[in-house]
Image 1: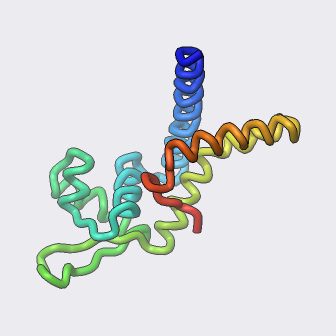
Image 2 (image 1 turned 180 degrees about the vertical axis):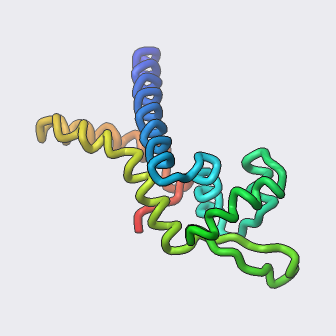
Length: 151
């Protein structure tokens, strides 16, 4: 039974990731924001004291390239820069309210396909799905690894 469960879960992850990533990519194109910029927004959200060099390192690009990538996001009002109180040369980055709303909308879009799928199930099937997913969530303890983007 273990190989069957493992294969089924792999298929589910592959399909759900594929659909979610496709929707994030589509959202980024519709909003004229690159995937690296979305990656930077996520990084800034997850670690509040973040600076240009950290973003560059995380994205595998130079600090100069990261600065260019982030400048447009500052202009759009998605992120804010502030001086580091300990070193005025360092500019800390944080999400603005607009950036938080944008990121939340991005993730809402990423799993809209799932909402559309769920409505095709009966109430009994939905209860079964909820029970199984709750068991998985409790085992994974996902709340320790991924911050909630709900506003």
